[in-house]
Every structure is written in C-alpha cells, then in structure tokens.
Amino acid sequence: MFRIFLGLMALLFLGCTSSVKPDQVYLIEGYWKIDYISHGSEKFYPRGAEKLLDFYEINEIEGIRKKVQPEFGNKFSVTEDFNIFKIIFEGDNCFIKLQTPWDQWTEKIILLTDEKLVLEHREKRYHYLRYSGQY
Image 1 (cartoon, helix red, strand yellow):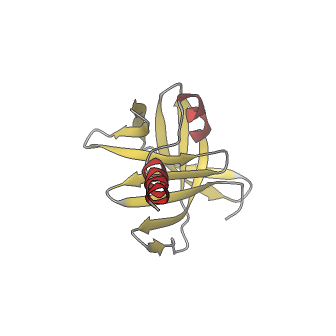
Image 2 (cartoon, helix red, strand yellow):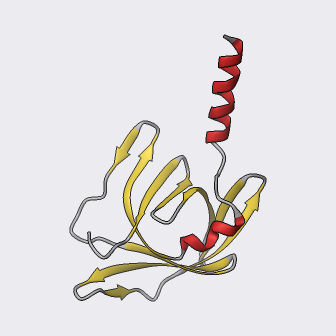
C-alpha cells in the first residue's frame, strides 16, 4: 500500500514539472489560438466575435510575441505592439520571460508540442492549439 502511495506521489510531482527540453523551444514559433483557460477545476472558453491569435517568432532563445487577427484570404491584421521574450530554463522547468517598456513578467511553459501549448501565469493555465487557418 505504501509503495502505491509513493508511486502516486512521484507521478504527481513529475506532473508538476515542465516537460519542455531546450531542443524543443523552436516549436513555439508560429500562430497559436486560445482553446480555453483553466483555473483550478474550472474552464473558461473565449467568446466574442473578435478572435485574436498569438504569433511567436523565435531566434534560438529570444523572440517576440504579437497579437494578430486572421482575415479572409489567409492574411493577418497585425498590431504594432509586441512583447520581447527570452526562454529560460531553471532546473526541470522552462519559462518565457516577457518584457514591454512598461512591464515584465514570466510565464511557465507546461506543455509544448507541434499542436499544443500550455502556459501558466498567476495560477491560470492558458491552453492553446496551433492555428490551422480555421477558427
């Protein structure tokens, strides 16, 4: 019984660390749409007519993040604003350190694959799907 408890605790502990490795950070490049936001056991889905995407451009461990809006004909409306970021590894965890002229903050990368991105900031998890040209 004690071994089962230890095994479950190990799984729980490993589940709280980031699974992102340095050779995977290039996967963040591209367009991402928010699927939902989770906080505790609750899920919140985006509503409204205006759908924005996050666009990441990365060069090794530094890059920019911009908000873009898809338009007809596979084009995008892009704002002039952007956030500079740097990828940082601390132990087994991977973070995006973002910066604007007015603020700076850190978001933990929980999951990063070809199709999914999960970021954690202030006890909320932002679940993204790679944008495929359709909303």
